[in-house]
Image (tube, rainbow over all chains, first blue to last red; front, top):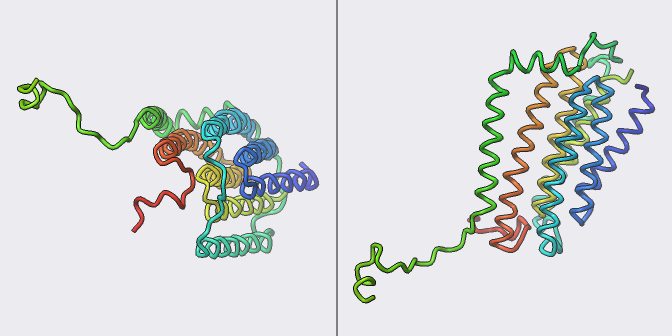
Length: 186
Length: 100
């Protein structure tokens, strides 16, 4: 992939990322994030990570972002209003973060030669589903299984959180059970 | 071919935008999206180094990050919904029950 193509994708990605953070309407933020994910999938392909590019589109741009849009849709009206930090400390922290990452970026740009020049041709089959699965189901089998447990816990947790009412508990009036006075009067 | 440093630089820029977004936005949904942006930036750097070092471990790490992000999104959005339903706000500044 040429430098020009990379530059185009990079500029579009940064613009989409800025849209995520700067737009007051969360729906546009979500659209910006979907753009970022699709553009990153393009970069993954350029880095020979074909399977991951597919996962990026299916899982991130597909499933996760649809979840986000569902929540935005469900909340609707309550999203309106000012959504910028009021405390000046947070803006100072944001400026500090910008300075820190600017320094990191400058060090990467200045030390670009030390990080290595252009990438050579990839090894045969690098990034293929076969190679990914070969390593996933041998070296990292335990992590893979633990991931399934994690997903199960997340599903159960999400269902419980979505069902729970969290209302302050009113004393339950249930004459006859643990309330001899009530049972007596009834 | 594009040098690896360009990918790392792009990853840093995306991570910075995400981090600043978490700090300066108070809408929890947008803050959550900024967190996802940071995860994506890290994924890009993982994939770039996997390519540069010729090792699949970086790509596997990205696979796990994607999985954990999906789980995190499911639970996090459920929490946001529960808070919005009970306190009628999605702004971090207005949920001050635990603040001293």
